[in-house]
Amino acid sequence: MTTVSDFGEYTGAMGTITLSAGGALADVEFDVKWSRSTVTHSRGGKHSDIQIPGKLTVKTKIKKALVYADAARTLGYGLTNTAVTGTATACLAATSFTAGTAVPITADPATASVLRVRTSTDVSTAAGGFTIVGTDVNDVEQSETLTIPNGTVVGTDFYTTKVFKLANYAITNAITGSIKFQIDGVAATATYAVGDPKVFDLVGVLTKGATTITITLPDCWFSSGGISWVDAGKIVDVDADVEMRDPDTLTITVV
Image (cartoon, rainbow, N blue to C red):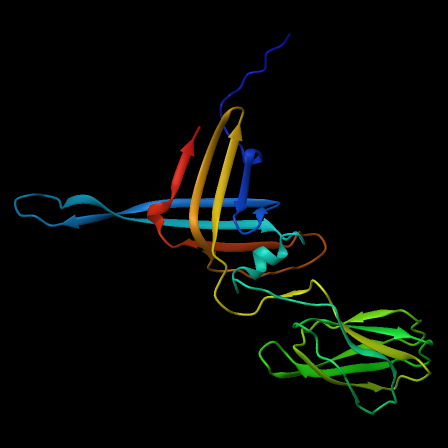
């Protein structure tokens, strides 16, 4: 029997990061640092100031690969604590359109949602645009035009990229044939608009054998965020700075 030495050091492979608002994060790097300022006072008859420990500051940063299961948390939580979730809603039954003529949409989405446009009855015989006009989550009028390719078959779905709170009317351009269009709100879509950020507990854990180091930061929020991508040869990273309400509540447990 061969005994393998345990050198005792931790590596990043032994760490996990958890948000109380939604469980562990995937493919993440965690950087937490603290520093204590020095309070000084000059004094006569000495060559130096007297020094005492001062305020504690905690700086935390999360860097992670953008994983779709984590996207809402790492991108949305810095903007708002409550997402607007879409609801499946029948907004317009399958309807024939005449190019250039607006057709009222009979029902708004039950909650703000991206909209699905589904084709029925026949194929399109010419490419064209399908425009939806309504309002966004802030009640500002908006529109979006979907391109419907020539030869689009029955049952093809197209989705808006914009979120509609109200859907007022739709209009087509250049599309021909007896094709019909149905409009629906989409369930489970989520929209994160600007508001108060999500507050969560951040917990970093390093486990090696029977020994675990746990760093707990209560009442945190993402103070920065964003997204950037370049080409197919790179994974999209998300960088987020983390602030905590009360640095005095930082705890480190070693068991």
